[in-house]
Length: 337
Length: 277
Ligand SMILES: Cc1ncc(C[n+]2csc(CCOP(=O)(O)OP(=O)(O)O)c2C)c(N)n1
Image (cartoon, rainbow over all chains, first blue to last red; front, top):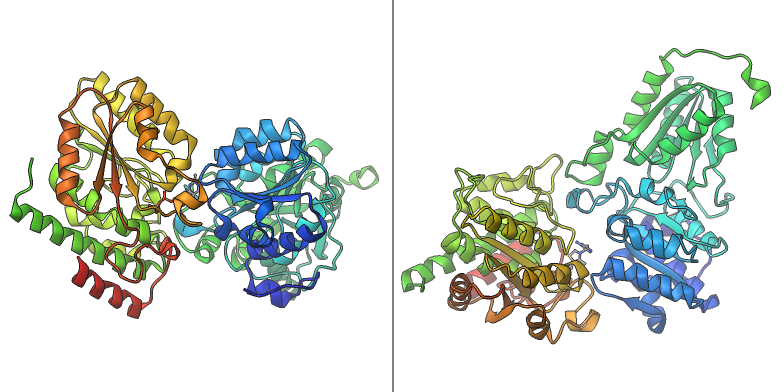
């Protein structure tokens, strides 16, 4: 195994490792200066890579066997005892099998517990719907006290794991499974929980993304720029609390919004953005890309991303469609936003 | 239903075929849960080729016996059994794991004929099996329900909630199997989360326990016959098996829980199966 000693991740490291591997190494590194960190998993030390922490700090690591409800209950107890639990299992099991433990034991009691959910969305595509998680964001954002982060790539995962330590209360960080290529080149781009990052400036339309779709939308924006379209791309890594200012600025500046997420279009990023826009009373052309309320097909992730139009081509197609759409202009807006 | 010499040889041949099928499908699929698929072969073969009342030409016939593969990641072992039984053409498994295939790692009952329950999330099978068995009893129907779990799977609380219910409701028209191959993903069951004394646990929950060599058709048949002939308590058959059974380089090695094989490894595996059975 590569020994990672530096504190900053380069695109080289990140492309050679999965998001989960980077998370394992960052946690192992943080463990040295934070003796309160404990790691927990449910027979997925290898698959989630929290085992990297476990190898370094075996006495601070608990593998509870295949028992996710117990996993989160024990984590709640450890948090109550003053420790800082990082709990890792697949997103489907963290959000659904242990749903009530996360809600009632962790969120209701507002415990300082960090959940790193791997194999999010359709990233484990060949496993099918028992292992896919396209409803976890909806579930997690509905829990009071919970912060929900969907990092764009391995480098942002490193940032999110470091940042969540200074962010009291429950945090859900959702990552993928495969070797997702990275958007970021290094960690120094100003990651802050709750603050969207503009990765591409534009004035015609805004793509609001999280997770693997950030890179895809960033590439789409470059292609569309050649056609003369000015596309803004927001990396909305924190889905809760959502960056309302960035959303409303996008509505004001571009009046056309597409949200793009590896999730059901019900209850996820698109819904969070729609809530902000609806509450503002402003109108705009609006479209949600994601799974259209269906259980996903079986296949390798790349094929599935293409099928659900979450890849560059799918996004470009959708942008062209939304650019051709009429909506009512309201000139009064500018002074209100 | 004692096994004749001839029947025994036929079952053994079928098991050999299924093991080679599992190897082939794993190669085609680009990876699968091969270790746990190889450990459960005799259980599936004896159920589908000796005991279960099923009709591949009429997969939904109401009086069929039901089977739930609660260790749903064994799909790569279950699908070839269904194919060889005649539910669908074996060549369809060439699409395993591929885009839009009906066959993913965890078989989807709405897409694959003969699959009575969509499983994959561990600890769901036994509760559903108890429900099916209670349903059959309530409707005074004579079909039986079979459920196969992994041993690691028995860490899940829901397994024991269902076991408690089976004991409490005295569910005797259901037979539970545990593929006791001693391994899960992160290591040995007894190292990761100890299950022993395993048979005592089942007894305490109201079961009669039959502990057998899970690769011996004779022992499996004796245990199943016993279960069919008693109405006192639910029966669990603890099938002591080897993960990766039949493929020398996979046997008892936790790293083959999930793996992919190239054509050379695939051939080596088939040769090993030919030699060892
Ligand atoms: C609820 C749930 N948690 C975790 C997993 C991931 N997982 C798949 S297989 C497996 C190990 C299963 O071990 P065991 O039941 O002993 O099966 P076998 O060794 O027979 O393959 C795990 C943890 C899952 N499928 N479902």
